[in-house]
Length: 268
Image (cartoon, rainbow, N blue to C red; front, side, top):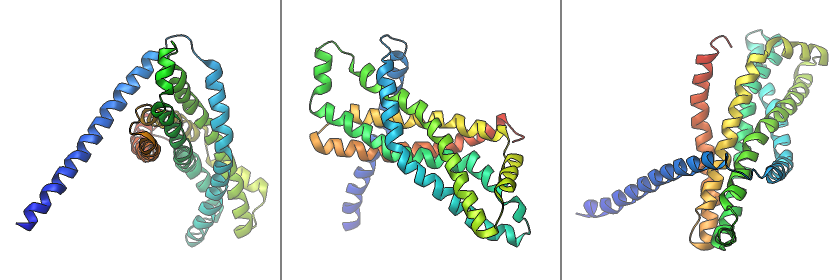
């Protein structure tokens, strides 16, 4: 009897979570559809998009700089003993370069960006929602969705690829430092090895999918903040949930996009 009594609350709690998850997916889909309808409606708020791109890029630059440098340094130092074991030390720069350009650079940058930006958007829009600032904008004749949501999603979508290119460059700097420490390789040889190994076709899929990752960060953070409820508690929940959901969706879409990339570019 005790087991049956305790199993009922667990089942109901699981059902509640599943219901909330499905409601969130449906809400995200409707929110996304509303975004695509609004982008063709003037005014286009170019100044707001530029402002958000500047803010998101500058505020995220320090943490992605440190992250990119550490990625290149650690991956190179970790791969060096493996390359020595198989007698392939000469291929170390090229192997690290391909790993960073294809996967590590875009995905790690997107996850850092999600943790820094998605929570900020969720908290900012959530506080505006619970303090009725968004309602006041609607009353005054301003389209809050166009002014607050569309501009932030556009900024996230187009600033993340720029940050990714920057992180890849910084990762190469860290990788070169690691190579100098463990192998005493010259800069010219390191650069030639990377250029000979990393082709232009390696960079295209990695950079293109960051547009999708940036859109995910913007749409999830905006949705969680724009639909926040229950006062300050709801604002905190919106910020936290935005990070978790956007990071999870980035990893899921990365898995799908890798498969699509291999299908479209089978020779890379």
